[in-house]
Length: 254
Image (tube, rainbow, N blue to C red; front, side, top):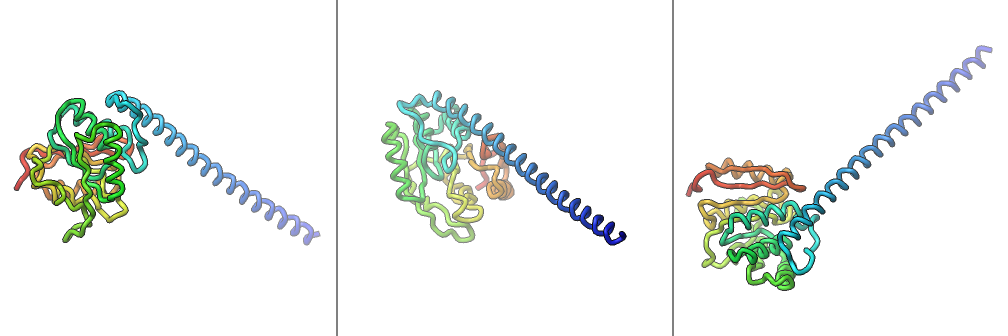
């Protein structure tokens, strides 16, 4: 009798254990599904928001055909809209861009609309540089932009960066610097060299727009810049991938 009761007790324990394991698995699945649903909801909301920004950007630019694809490797519509707004409001005579693509088209088109300025884009990939040039021709804004093939070259004490010697010496000092390259995969703090190397070519009252400013590398880059350059103000604005606006409070120290 005792053996039978013990057997029943063991069977019950096993049943309870199996049930607990199954309930635990179901609980984990429910949590995972909740995370997936939450991530999907966020992505849908983000996609909708970016679509609205895309519509606003398209309306502002009034191009004769739709914009090329944005997001992903290209700038997100909200960032591109901020770039367009900055160029339209400040009317910079010289814009220097690290990387090229849809942002180059946006800048060139706004300059064409206002009749002021020229954008120079440093592009490390020769084939992509030619694609950007062709895109500018396709949209009829090639007179307002110059895409320069600038390979990434070693820099003492820094990560490899664009060969900015390709920028013609006669180009005036830069009013607006737009940073969306090099790609993060090329090196840690891949975009940090921009300010140390380009500082002599910037106007005293410059503006820098930094894309992907929510990433850890870009945040560390901005902190270093502020430590190394006196009177540097950084304003963070909400964009899908983050935007930082960098300006000197006063004149840059020599």
